[in-house]
Image (tube, rainbow, N blue to C red):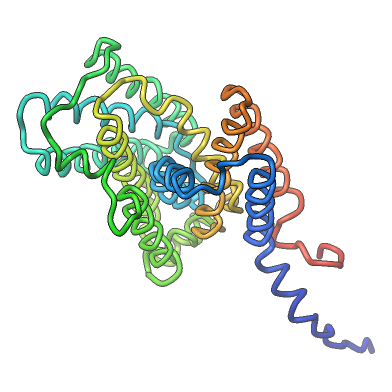
Length: 333
């Protein structure tokens, strides 16, 4: 007769580190970046520069929070940069027609949601891989933006209330940063404490099992693209308000930064696991690296190389080390 014994209880500290390995790793990396750039530049820690970093990071964070939902379901949205550009351009065109800016803001958010749900319908209900749908969307949506603007920037004038969304401050904190923080808090609460958040994780873990227990699995998949579209609209409006113009060339490479922030934060590309806190830290890390390299007088084009390398390393860590079977100081099992 075989005798069975219970596995000895592990160290609470080791269990905590193993459970939160992704967030702890990006936290350490983020702090390392702060220390490095603070030591190598004279102005990195200046209040004006810090405010500039968080103002510029705000649009990326807003879309990255939504992208976290998308990737948790096992999908991806490559069209976010193009959606931001189209909203950016259309908002400028409509404002130039004389429509009140609050109406334009609401209209653009609805427009962004429609773009997102259309792509979500193809992914969820037509069974087309998200990569293909959103890759097509990247081209189509950017093409519409180019067609509407003919490649020119559309100036925005005479709407100080709208400009406050991108340039204003409240208690010394940039308004875009406050909006991004609100979006991040809502995203965290939804994932951690709501039925919808649990359904998103369940669908990402096993879509068929979620469907069999009665969850509206297809709708959940479609809905995360709607969330992504709304986030892109908010981001596009903030960029237009900050720059005072709309352009079809806005947010070029935006999707690269967003995806880098999400995977760097530990969200699994296989679906079923994600962290809004990790996404926040990933976004700030990307923003700090870009800003720090500029302050060091390194070519801004080098930032693309660094961002690509970060994505590669983050995916490697995501798939090879920080898996569900990872244990600190022990073997995978």
